[in-house]
Image 1: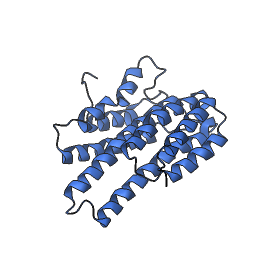
Image 2: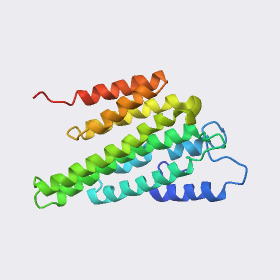
Image 3: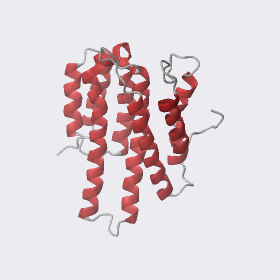
Image 4: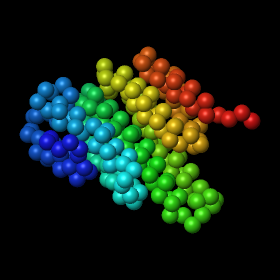
Length: 222
């Protein structure tokens, strides 16, 4: 906790301690626990990855490899906090949302750096084969983001914390679209429209409406 920023290796150590050394009957670090809230906040602090992945002085290969490590640690955290109780509700609903929002931010940089590296290492960045790989990567991250939207189908599992999902949409989905403006967001628009009809949460409805408007704004006139 004395370190200003955590590396992927720090994440690995902390996640291991939480998973295997939390005493039986005790909770994982969580926001509502004054004794462990600082640990959880440190886990989901976006500055941990931004300080590395957005540093112009660091090499592209190093940042790309670091982004993959952060992405893998995010998946470990998400699995850790995805536990449900006997009523099929999340034990750590607020924490799971914060973890997955952390993951959305990591992924934008992970895929952007990956595509940048592909273009840099390609003999012909404008070649059809290269563009197909880049487009495929863009569709992969869009599919990953759609998984976040699927949380809305299970919003009952989040209880009163469900409205917190809205921030992930208005923040990180917009960042995704701004980072990959030429990608095909048809599948995301379809998913968002379906979730808008399904949700009973007004904050989520508003966030989804904003997302649909953002996607629609990308459409170029014929």
